[in-house]
Image (tube, rainbow, N blue to C red; front, top):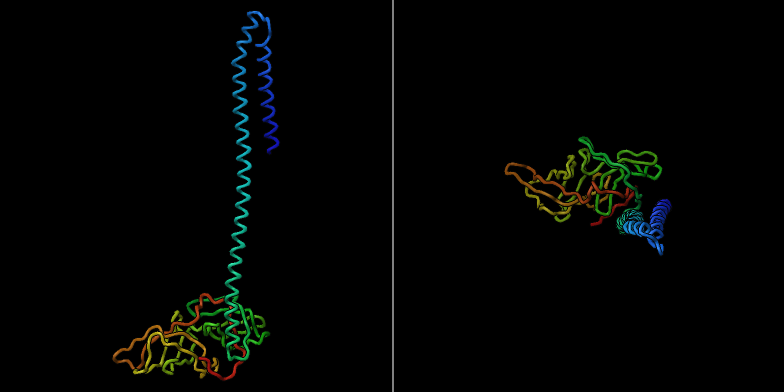
Amino acid sequence: MQGLLTKRKNMVAGGLLLLLAVGILTSGKEGAGPESRSSGYAGLPLQGVASSIGGVFGSFFDRFLFFSGSAKEAVKLREEVEALRFELLKAEEYRAENERLKSLLAFKEASYLDKMVPARVIGRSASAWYRTIVLNRGSLDGIKVGAPVVTSYGVVGRVYESGDSASRVLLLTDASSALDGILQRTRGQVLVEGDMTPSPKLLYITRGTDIEEGDKIITSGLDGFFPKGLVLGHVAEVSEGSGDMFVKATLEPAVNFARIEEVFVITDFYEGVRE
């Protein structure tokens, strides 16, 4: 494209130079008569016009080529910036994943649990009937129905379906989920029951039980699925009606279920307390 423009520029400039030469030859003859001098005078304006037109066209083509090259350079720079931005996003994602995995590894090393299989969340379902996630581990990895699922923050739920290479986990917030807990500060017993909301209910807390908002709740180990001492969350709200036999309270789970990406499935554990 640039070669074609240069060629056209040269053709225009050559034509103008030819006109200019004709004008000079016409006006520059020595000893010319009145007719010749008259023709020479007529050629002077033509020379000026030719010079002006050549200057305008030359300036136009120079600017066109300059800005054309600048536009191409701008496009190239923009593409390089986009590529660098993409690489920066990937680096940030790798850093965040590294932090999560370091946290899980530290939890595993500090845990009293015998066997834990790491798994990645590959799907999730949330409807009016159930709250589940899907893991990339199954029975071939030792995952069994009923196995507890946890993160370094606390309890996620338990496995209720297990295929060869994938399994489905019932979350703590699901209406079918229920497990025994302990108020860590006072050792009072509670039942944590999901109700399809972000805050499961705390049931069977008798009047007069020492319970306060912010109290941490851990697993009791009495339900046969979860070992004792895993964090469930803390007491979010407490209300006690004058005629009620039980205190009404809700749990703020320790795990943010909307942001789970990696978990541990507990395949075996021995009795112990981690508080």
